[in-house]
Structures are given as C-alpha cells and as structure tokens.
Image (tube, rainbow, N blue to C red; front, side, top):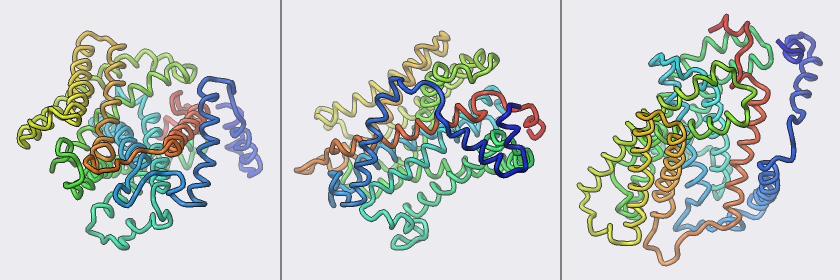
Length: 408
C-alpha cells in the first residue's frame, strides 16, 4: 500500500481531502501530441456548448424539424453506445460463463463503458431543443409508459447505475476503503446480471426507435429486424473497441500492466477475434437474408446501393474474413487491422441508419455544421482525458492491493 492510500485510510477527514487534492494534480508530460490536438478543440467546443445553451440549438447545429436527429445523436449516442457494448459482453463471459482468461481487462472495459454512457447522455442533452425535458421520457410524461423511448431512457439510466456499481470496488481500493470494498464487491454479481439484461434490451431498443421511421429511412437500411441487427452488431463493435483500446493502452499505460497480464494479452486478443468472426458471420448472414427477402436488387445499381455494398463487403465481410484467418494464423497485427476496419463499418452503419439514409430523398439534405463536429469531438476528448486520469490513479490495469483479494 502506498502512502496516499494510507492517508485515505486515516479517520481524519482533512487527511482524506489532502489525499484527494493530491490526486487532482496533473501527472506526466503536458506537451504530447494528444494534448496539443485535444486541448484547443476542447476549449473551442466548450465555448460552442455555452453558445448552444445561451442562444439555442439552431445557432450551432443544422438540425431541422424534418431532420431532428443530428450528429450528436447519430454519432455520439447511437454509434457510441454500440462501441460501449464490450462491457456487457465481457462481464457475461467472465462472471456468467466463468471465462477467467478475460478477467484482467474487465475493469478497463467497464470503465470505458460507463464513461461512454455518461458522456453520450450529455451529448443527448445537447441535441434536445429543450434540454430540460430530458426527464420526460423517464417519467413517462408526454410519451406514456408503453413507448419505446420510455423503455430506452430507463434502460440507459439503470445501466449506468449498474456499471457504476460494477466499477465501485476499484474506487474503494483507490481510497483504501476496506469496509466499503467488501460491501461493494458483494453487490458486483447482482449488478452484472442486472446490467447484462439492461444492456441487451437497450442495444435492441435503440434499433426499435427506428422502426417508427419506415417511410424516412432508405430501404437498404430499413427492415423490421433493426433491433436484432443493433444487438448483434453491438457484440463485435464492443469487442473491436476493446481490441483497439487495448492496443493503445498497452503503449500508453505499459507501466501500469503487470508482466503476467502483458503475456496474456495476445491470447485475449485471439479469443476476442474468434468471437468477432462468429458474430460478424451471423450479422452478415442475417443482412443477406433480409436483403433477399426485401427484393431490393434494383437499388444496388444506385449511389446509395454502391454505398451499401461498400459497407457490407468492405467493412463487414472483409474484416470478418481477416478475423477468422488471423485467428487461425495467430496474426495479432492483422487482428488489430480487422478491429479497426470493423469500427469504421459500425460507424458507417449507424450513421447510414440515423443520418445518411434518413430522408435521403429530401430536396435539402442535413449536413452537420463544423460546430457540431467540434462539439462531437469535444465530448470524445473529454471522455479520454477522464479515462486517462482514472487509469493513472486507480487500480484498473495494475493489480489490486493485497487486502482487496480477501473480498473476492
């Protein structure tokens, strides 16, 4: 136990505040490429957010009454939630299927999922014309308890609570709070089961929202199985993000990872690639069946048809094959390439459903303003900054203190 943790164990409240104040101090180098790029964008983005709440949504966004869902919903929320799917998949694998091989990456994955949901909820508030009405879907006001939005709102809220409980033992270890750690560790399994159920409902529920826009979404992306497609794609989207984020963390936070976990990384990546290949095959097969059943052959020889083929062949079929081949050949580099291509494909699909293919036949199409792009990047960069702060201070990647093992 280090000196800071010992201070946190002290009963003197001033010592605890002193510990927290010390943890708030910046660490590491300031002039890094990421900092140089992200800080100006964050400052500009925060200024634009102030303008958005001061003068209204129309001052910074190009959304209209006809196209009310802009970049912040389509990219930060609809796409971002898919990438956060790795949390429910891995907790199911580790805690339910008892696949202990993946236990070392559970905390970082849950942290990433929790931050994603928290910040994408913020992005959702930004994209509401009247943000103070954010509570309406939760309480059923103006929508009713039977609406899809009511269910999605509750799934979203409760899943964030479940993820916070799952991650809370890490916070207790950081603070040296042994009694709280024991209590919170005992709540983990219930939170995991609750969270897995909520996340699966939420991922499919997002897709169900688009079922009400049949006449507005391009036929190549609209079908009655959108909820199933969203759920299945969230599996390989989330695991691809885990592979991608893990590859970066290995380099940025290499001093936080134990030698034992470093040696296990390649085996973990290979296992995740196998799951990605299987779920992508299921997704591609379902999309093929839906396309054949819909008889949309004539749409393929159009601009939107070519875009659809690029998505399905270039960013689903090809990475699926790469995942399978690289798993068989134990090619870790190729697995990382496949994960990156998969992430591009997921972004394309979610934007095609929510923005590009939405009101595709309108005379005036929605195009995000540069200010919307800056704010979207601001949300992501702030999330990364907080993620980095937590990793550098809490036992997320590094081993837990010896006393914490007593409660597991």
